[in-house]
Length: 155
Image (cartoon, rainbow, N blue to C red; front, side, top):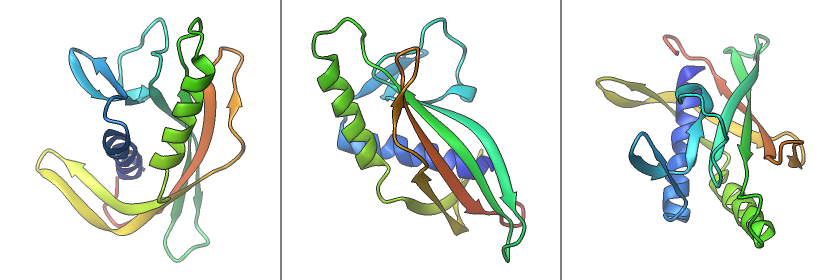
């Protein structure tokens, strides 16, 4: 699943950089598109604002397919500054950016290693599983089911 998770993250990151180059964040002194994978970052006391935070949760495997079909749920959480007067407009803008970077909903799976990226033989594809909600802590929450067929040697 690691190749699938990496491919999905990089697709969203690169699409956001093209769609809205001003939506950035600073992580360890580096400015980059505002998409983070929580398991890859140092814990912080406060969730960053105006940043899409990816959190991988449940994982299943369908062995009834010609090749094993792995599916993982990805929670995409984001929030705005709670005290800004235009926070409704900002969350709407983030919703629209997320809608755009989720399209198209399929991409060639890639493997990322120290020697470089290579394109694998299968695609990964995704769909939003339910309507977006706002959590008790004020995050907007989108849940995406990301699926890919497992290839030989796939991480």
